[in-house]
Length: 355
Length: 271
Image 1: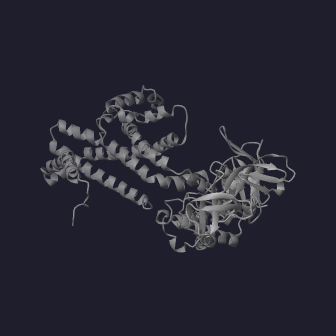
Image 2 (image 1 turned 60 degrees about the horizontal axis):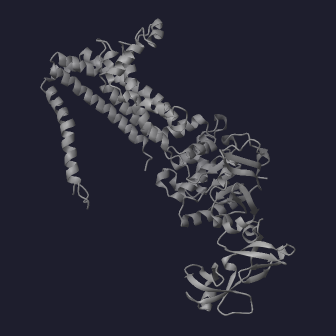
Image 3 (image 1 turned 90 degrees about the horizontal axis):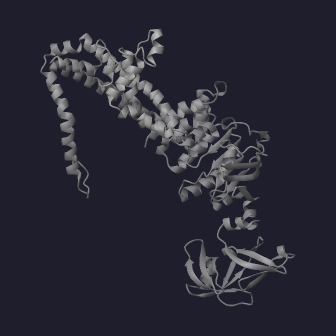
């Protein structure tokens, strides 16, 4: 295991940030901690790094099967990347990256030439070789974050921890840096954990995603698993837009609005209230009533700028719906604002109402 | 070339006019008259006055004690400011207010208080007297008084700089393996150096001009410059007084220029 943290609890005064959370990351894996603000994801990352102490009674923290829970942050050999870069602004890019090498105890400190060699190799890795003598304020946000990354890598860390690494960047740079980081990870295979509140970022970048809410882990899985097979309502709602209905489970079927659909996973369940979720792209839109059971709805708004067309619909039964369809399909339907359409769900996600 | 950028909002003429008249009346004209007064002396007289042992002694004492006082304040003021900014404790507001006292008190009052405290019978002085250390009525007394009045300048200029310090930067240094000392020396100190130098310069300038409290702690053989100038005036030696003032002025200008250059250098990375 690259990183293991067992039964971590953390309270700040009366606020519980983490409730008995355990996590394991395989060696060389890139894991995302995904959750809304206040979900405890950053606290968990900082505890792994040693920047925060867990409550007493929390379990071990292991890096590559070695317990580091009692070690201070400086001797854990973690590369930590901060959301706002936290660069040393009075030092050049070169000196920033060299810092971790220069502060080593004399016996382990590399010589001047070796430091230069190592720093330049890292700057090449983050594509900033010709920026070595600039100061941080002379760089763009994306460049600064790459310097921060090179600085973290300079100490040859056992694990790499990134706290919202793209949080302070604008959309385009974010996208580029995200893909670049994934390529970099595939190259150096360092066990890495990053924190994000952006589901696209987590799903695109990570090998596995850990969805957190209110100090607990909601689900751990590959991006595919958490997106297509969410195990909790929170995960369904957090990972993208979703249509919600109050419904009822009865005899293996779920009834909601004017529809009834098979719900095989609740086959043996007793009759009870249920909560029904449908993703916008799981709604089929037609302009003519077919033999399929469908919801009749009126088109309120059409957003057609984008790879897909998004529709806002008002169902006859009262619900406001969001649907998504391809540009092709949209053109074939020939609908406009005010048109009446028939909506058929392809797939629904049903949770029995908690009692 | 236009002297200023055109702006749609008026007000430049009026404010600039006020600024120039005010500065002329208060600063430039008095200084110019000082130079004029000393210019009434012949060069030999001028030279004789400023190289007089009494004058040289006063210049040495004034600059030496002021630099020493500013240095002490830079070190301890930094610790005071750090404590006030970084930690919360009972009585913090009180201590914060105490820092301003040397600023707010009439200097004569602080002079008397210090003279009492450090005299051979005073609370502190009596413990030092057996070792032959006499603070009052000596150059050490001068230094104590100058240190006292300079403290608020260092603390008050450092506080905002320390509040601006990003805790993440210290965490970054720690995660890279730096010890607390290495972080303080290599990361924190260079970041606050410009503010520290400003505080140092202000404390130094303030000490150089101090008169009110020093007279209670000095003696008539070891005078600071303001005391010497006052003595000269009492003896109606106006030109001599002006000559000493001019030399002091030039010297302090050079010192402050040097501090400013250091400050500019320490800020070279700033945006």
